[in-house]
Length: 296
Image (cartoon, rainbow, N blue to C red; front, top):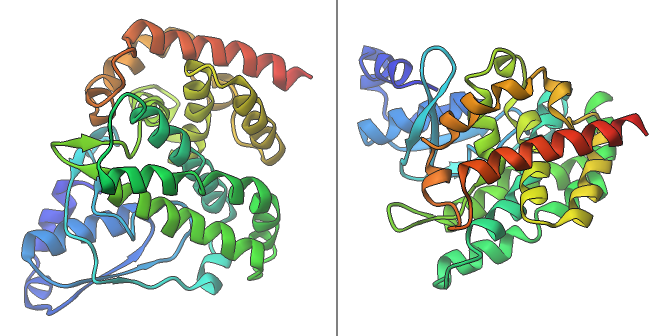
């Protein structure tokens, strides 16, 4: 999802003549179509084919540079409707649902953490409260959903996880984002991800895979160690990373990660107690804890 790709579609005569834009595919395809539809003021209908993200439901696009590094956010209108076919998602790559679980694990802890110092008005308050139903279905149904995806079967577990990843987290995103007034949609877990996009190994791993590790870093930072350990156990069981060794990022790259992270919207709207030094320290601490946990 780059502005260049979107602008190329906007310049396409076929797209210019279209009455409706259909966004079909994964998160980056959906985000590109959201950008195009918004810029061209055309109706948009979205058809997610994977359960890896909430892009099909949200009013935010994650935009990248052509080299794959994070660029910025773009804020389009919402799609007229999102169509979810779990038969299609059950037939999608296992790794994308796996990464989607990792991404969705961030929603509750990031919304609660980023809003903790503020007196919330009705809509963001509702969004933060809704975020609190996003974690448990993933922990309860995640393993069974992944097995169903592996077997290409639609099951209750798969449906619960897909609805959590696409709908629940998407609604939270919409309720907790009102630029430039407030942004509680994501926080330090995504700072870890955006930092990883400038490392040597970061591009070899999926967005949600790295965010899942970022969740552990955030919970370490916030001192919620029991919750961190519970999610770390879950990550270990389904193969999501619990230390940076598992995604090929070295601690001597943490400096460049922090430099990238502090350019993000998440950093701008961080709680006041968050500093560069403390952010780096939570990554170092989680790397240490994760290494020990993996060795058990």
